Length: 167
View (cartoon, rainbow, N blue to C red):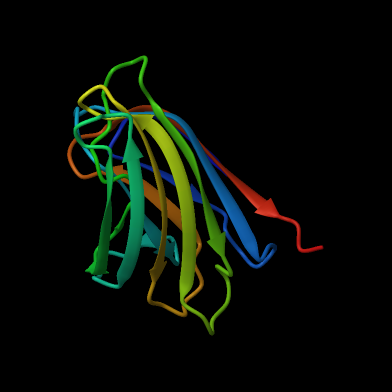
């Protein structure tokens, strides 16, 4: 599946099923409408985004800023997974890009794990990169992923879903 944003509240990829044990979600040229807003994801079960406080995540980020070079963010009870702690730039020439690995999405016996890495420009004009991991506390099959910002729309961007061959 794929999606392209054009001032969209969210960008969703669906079509995750038992065909593959691992899926790669690649996002590129993503730009928020609101400078400094944070990128987030929710997993979808039965086509609906899970909004309960059943997400856990942790991430480390670093920046080219000399005064604030990096840090960590985490939560053990969240309603979404935060992909980048420091807010992204809304400038047309400064989009963010990255990827998310989703493991065993169709299993009905394990919680759903993800890991990710992304890169972009912060709202304050410095380069950043984030590496993180998270999970959704459910044994239900995940059927998709929804991207959104904590404030405002997604002005532009592309998302592509790839299945990783089982052999």
